[in-house]
Length: 171
Image (cartoon, rainbow, N blue to C red; front, side, top):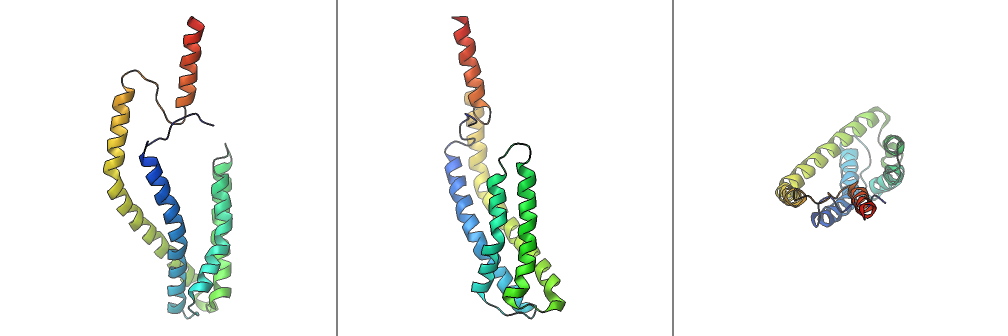
């Protein structure tokens, strides 16, 4: 649709594979965190139950991710769906993991903060591993584009079409 090339060339496939694997693994990590803290806050531990909560609550966020590329309103739909997923998790956790009324909010907040911390650590490690390759790829693309060729990326296809149309009009 955009006519552009992959923004990081061959690294794009590796980033895609990592993001798919991390999205799947992330569901297990969140379920484990919910399960662990359920026992800590007086609930019933059960990984299957915690994973059921994650599986049900993640549906709106996944739909929001699919809607995110829509122009103008996609980001807002994605944000609303993500917030709704958080709300569903808050509502489902006490029912599935039998968390006492007095510690429901604390369990949820500690679980969400732990999830954010784990995600930051994994992202930092991944960035530290991938950053040299990404920088090298971007610098080599910049060197090849500085020779007067048309750039890739989001609007690269439009630039190529415009240069072809301009060349054709000169003939």
